[in-house]
Length: 172
Image 1: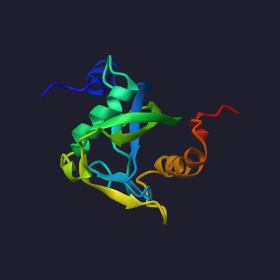
Image 2: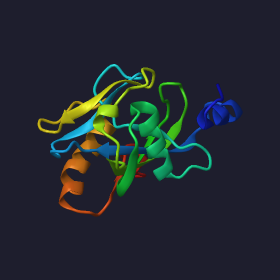
Image 3: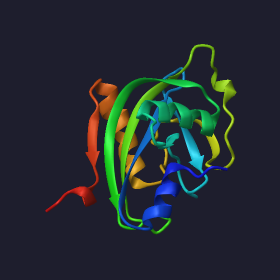
Image 4: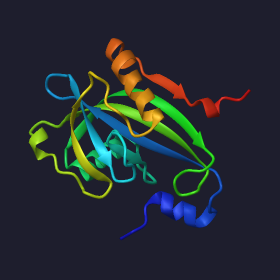
């Protein structure tokens, strides 16, 4: 199996800080009261949004469509940009310094696709389902919980995207 972009770059630069773009998506159910969320293979607790890191030469919109297909078997298309978030960590779960620049999109099923087509990959995604947003579901990391709150408040009230910068990004 071919190494992904991050693995190829890490093989060259080691643990030094790098910036990686990622894309994730929000897919509402028909009643618009639940979002498709996944139980991730790399986290024991909470939910995450389907998505992942961009491959070289791939747009954020292409990445979110690809990630949905890989992780859930669902064919989606991008509706709109929801927001952009930046998060810096000195040591991620692999021991690397990393800044993630994350772009979130609202997506919908392509014509002819159905939520019944949902099948998880069993590796990155262990389970996925439409999870009610009230009460708020537990997310796998605090940044995902902050993002979910923005999606449910700011994006539902406006068609304008938002920018969320992690506290560790802000310079004194």
